[in-house]
Image (cartoon, rainbow, N blue to C red):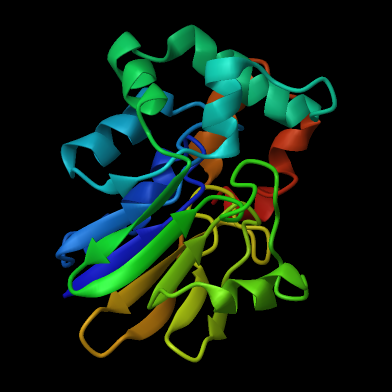
Length: 226
């Protein structure tokens, strides 16, 4: 079975559309949360996800929408949550409220553990490749542990399988304007990281029309707008 793993969509429909043809070739898609935040195509992105009946969990930005932002978050985070709060359709809000923070189960015969940040602290943790907590994941009895949150791809071999972070669809931070994802072959237990370029111009322009500050080009630079 071909299983796509995506994360951190962040209301960026342009990025999501750039990998839509790949998603159409899969048997199942897993999404690790953060459907909204930062950018302004909130309902479009959630519509896309819900139509495809993906296996989904909650991200920290989704949690902020439902329960409020911490005072310490950046202007960019505040903007995305406040905008989403104004425009999100009631049915989408209810759908988010029903998502789990952590999910474990079988997909295509392979055992998956899904968490946005980490299995211990799904909203707060950021597990970068150098984090000592990554090694602690090896104690879990799963074929594949999938994490998001960092916006940076990671692929680590375990004795029984893999730890994978597919990177971010909507706001990649290792290379600007790349929609990132992972493809899993559940029978061979093989994982491929995939990146697709996209034009961020419409994303930047829409955010600016809705009051976004200069931070809007931090990860979507002017070089991505053509």
